[in-house]
Image 1 (cartoon, rainbow, N blue to C red):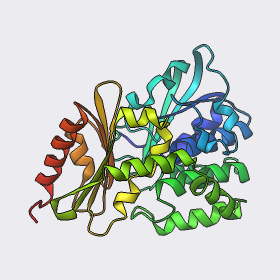
Image 2: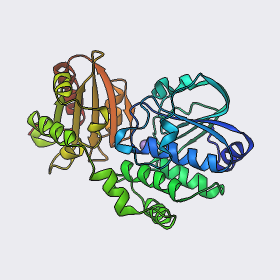
Image 3: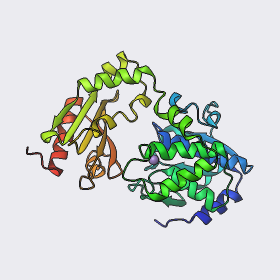
Image 4: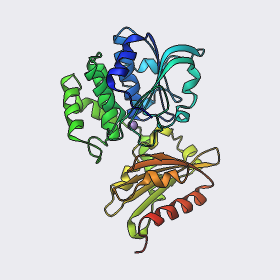
Length: 326
Ligand SMILES: [Mn+2]
């Protein structure tokens, strides 16, 4: 895979007219903020832009400027000059978003997942970037593409959510510099943080109460996990987005090295989310054993089996990596 430069990507963005901006299924703050931030910048440049992901604009992120891009009904598949995949480690993770694109002359792939194989014609993957939003800031700034308070707010949310509010080890000095730049561009950090971190529906706290009821520890407290069954999810009318960040309650416990969230899915699989607090425990490698992937300290997989079966297999795989003797 040959990496493209920002100059090459910038030239393609300027030279073409119609763009599809796509991201992964079950989008998070980085996916949505990156999509809307880039879409707003391109449209300010006079381009025709369509934005799609399989799940649309999540209610939680309804405040993001440019959200209307994701609320327009899905039309017939179209031909685009350029299709851009953001924050999406494998092409299949784009899900039904690609239904929008009948054809594209050029595919651009911009991401920060180290497992990204580099699909597409122009590829920019920086595994050291804590968020795709950070890469987009560098692209926009270096290529003199449009920036304004609305674009800045989207990129700030992308970076803030993927760094756990500038706390995870992937946060660098550059991340803070970009945060400062985005504030200078007009981001109101207090307002945005309240919208992102202090505006959850009550349902999410009720879900957390249920999850904590299933919490258990293994390996003398080095592993913590909780599980969500289909029944509890249905009883509480849980939305997929309610889960985002709940695993941090396990990560936050003293002595815990690996935190795991098991979620029963309706297709006979279990969604496994994993977080590691130690560079020595690469959860992306563990998730790859189950067909998943991600980052060293944050990864996921979808494993076939019942909740109990998958829990057992995954816990064993982690015990093979960390010392599970008390
Ligand atoms: Mn991301």
